[in-house]
Image (cartoon, rainbow, N blue to C red):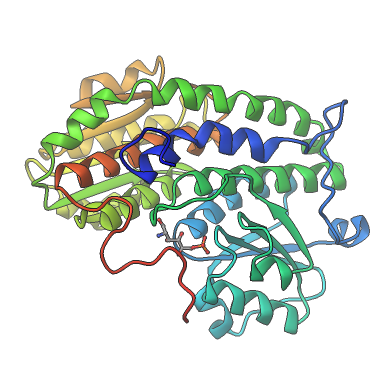
Length: 369
Ligand code: M6R
């Protein structure tokens, strides 16, 4: 049942090309236009959406953060991400034109369920992005978009995360197409690019030996930091969460731009820092800014573990290790850049002799508030 792997988590990491491909399956017609059959909210209602609030917890909330960048860019609809357990208590402002998108692998997370119920009670439309057919959250929502990651057994989420991000892209592109405007034309080309991602994940998974080796050397680490920017920021947060959950190591993710506002004080000789570098083709010169960040922390003695696109030579002079990922459109990069961080946490946990699939104190689905 573990497909020849030692743990479910390792198997599930290797399932990721399929999780993404299966989540894309059947969502375009022959002409490449997006079609979402499971959408029980009318096109008129969706066209009228003027605000989106994503509610989710943990890894699913990080998928929501990626969604914010992508959906806002493609649709120009403002997107907010709320931790589901906070949403209900912050007296949220919604109208019948607000779309509340919940993201949950299990479909049973109590915090997320309560947020969805509250959203409905106060008059919002609700869509559930969920991996589990017949679970409670989709039943309590107006519409559902299933992620097709297949059952996820390991407590730490991996393939469900990639499938959630994929589903969010599909939803964003669908809304863009529906609403017309400049990004509607791009929807088909982004879908094409997205279609090439599973193969790229496969290639990447074949190049993870060095990451495994690095993890093996780092079993004694007391703290590991993760930096990212734009869509790389939620990836940094997810990398840190994976390490906390699996290896019980203190880990923190930061937006790289925030470094100089405080966290850079943490940098001392030998401090390991993963840096998720934006593609050199990213807008607003973000790539150069993150490369400067690497330079700054390296000058203060950090051990820099850099995740950068194939062919990005600018990072070389400041990186102790460069982990290469295949190039893709900047907004789609999380589907690739998070993979080495998952693999790192898996092997660090293994190096410490811990239970990879069942970390202490955690449950696969959190059915209490
Ligand atoms: O089943 P859900 O997606 O609603 O679960 C949400 C979180 O509890 C979950 O992502 C959690 O953070 C995982 N342990 C992360 O690996």
